Image (cartoon, rainbow, N blue to C red; front, side):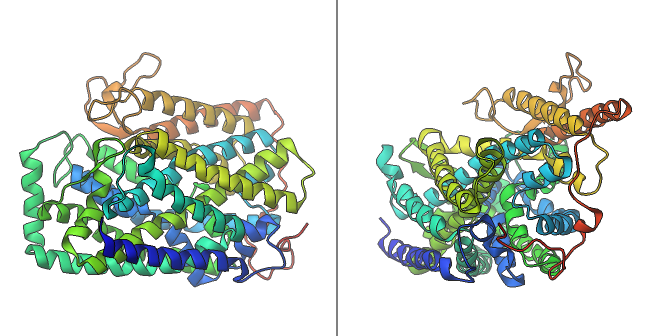
Length: 544
């Protein structure tokens, strides 16, 4: 047991817990019994709050734990996270402005709300909502994986159900203050989280290379490790087989990130378009941080850091690489701060993700199909309860499924959420796609994507199915035809599934439009996509 680190961790955890409960009165509106207030913080967050909120939402504990762990294990392939965040913000700059405006004008709380209004289709909105919830659940579970890696490094590494008890206690506390304060809780805590993370990473990338002899020594040690244990795709450089997978994974991840409901929740909570413009310009600062952070995987190689054995599974847990590196290389007091940064970094996105999933359930399933006349108070109560269910469903992922498999599930989540791109992102600009074309495209992309993922074994041979998201082109099967037979080039499954989705959506839409099949009613107006704060036609916040 690392007592000094544990005490500092608990002190900082206690501070954010107090902030979480206090947040109910921070920037409070007239009531929290409305999704505008509980689920979107009153739609009035300014530039600084939004920057910390979206940064805390997008750059999660999994980012701080698993990206360098992937660099530690596989080398250059793990660096895909940097180019993906570099191309991300130019891609989503204009679409986010449009979805903020139309959502603010029409009172939409979720991306499925927008789809329901744009196409007048409860079926298409339901598919988007279910996809968002299913893709978010393993993402929340991954926050638990990051938090549990810290707890085990602190010494709380028990076996069986007892080994998960500290994690369960932490999430009970998270569930309570999120239930009470809604989105204001993670928004306020994000200030503490990001300050701690920046402090720890800046110190780490300056102090550790100096201590270990410089970056040339670090890269030399990493190169020696990969050459000593050669494996397909591992190394300081990409090889001919994984370059295409690297590029498509980076592009697919960039297209997917702001389709996740929790990413859009942070955007919709903003006060206006100017706030979003400032944030999309400033958020790339996190990409610089991420690049430095990823290199800590090579630092761990040079330091001789080994993963801890997870006593709950009996297997080495690579997610403990960075926490263990900090424990070995830093003084105890600073290691405690670093552990708190990672732990709190798990709580912020987990809270936002559970709120976003709860909003989807409430607005697009409960109210749409179960209780059409639900009042705003009933919606808020339902969302609060749903957020609890989502959190403890994520805990169940960790309790009953190997945590390493949860990481693979997140890759599946990325493949899934990409299939909502035509219905959500493209629909912001055009209604050319027919509603039944979008439904057919979703079915094709989702179905084929899951079939491809099912057929891919894990690299370690422990699982025959759902092993990774990298598919060999030679194994691409189109109704028995192998167009790239024998090719060992790899490609990201989500990218292939999205192409199939778009091809089917275009074909079915063309047929449906030619046959003049009814394409639903669009309740939005062209001017809705350009309104800003203070506009006379804006729907009042928390309006009944």
